Amino acid sequence: MKRFFLAIFIAALVLPFQSEAKRPKPKAEYVVFIAIDGWATQSFKDKVDNMPTVKYLMENGCYTFHKRSAMPSASAINWATIFMGVPTEMHGYYKWNSSKPDIEAYGLSGNGMPVTIYTLLSDQRPDRKSACIYNWDGIGPVVDTLSMDFHLYDPGYHNKGGGYTLEKYTRERAVRCIKEMHPHFFTFYIGDVDEAGHKYGWESEDYQKCLKETDNAIAMIIQALKDEGIYEKSIIVIGSDHGGKGKGHGGFTLEEMETPFVICGKNVARKGELTDFMMQYDLSATLAEALGLTIPKQWRGHSMPVFK
Image (cartoon, rainbow, N blue to C red; front, top):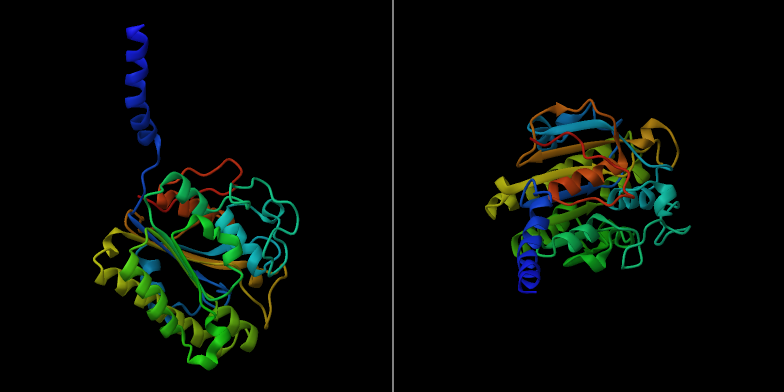
């Protein structure tokens, strides 16, 4: 009997360490996901010099111009896929501004919505701080805000009469969050590029001007990481939901469905342009690997071969 209880005692001591040993290790202590709504490959790939900060990250990390959106190429649908790791027919969001699944979703979490990258982080690494800031209210319903430490909706470009600029939004929201909180996983969503596409057209000079402003915002985020002494411990990921054509999107053309993907930072290989095909839900799996998370069986993506 004494041996029996001794065996149980030893197992109680050893099993947690075995579980921890099997858990994937994070590739970096901090992961920053810059989510640019409406960033189209067709409007960017021949004008990379217009975004020098992004160009630097591309040259020192990995990128592709050919990440393909889920169908149809609309916002809520694709942000749901990016954060939930599954295609449209599984998460059930199929309208451009869906705030809940339009059909019954597959694989709900304890919070009553499909498992997101934030759900996984909260469940598997509860000691890691997470944050999400966004200037379109459609993001909140697809990220599982109940699983994160901090989230904030700032109306942003919908409130330009109040002195809004993308620089101010970035400085007062993203930079402040990084400096005050040091989140281990931080999503900073920028809706301005999509707004410029709808208002002026994806082929317009005003759209390019907004991309330049977005590049400046990314530079501010990088500088904040450097100021806090955590840049060398960070991975920066930049991705988008859809492209655009004319002044719209939602269709099934490559102009609307192809978007760039960029990753650079600690333990990211310097491979330049990737030759592997990339789907929207592969972004989810790549974020999960960067964060040291085990993805659920229902996720459909594969982490891209970007890490050392």
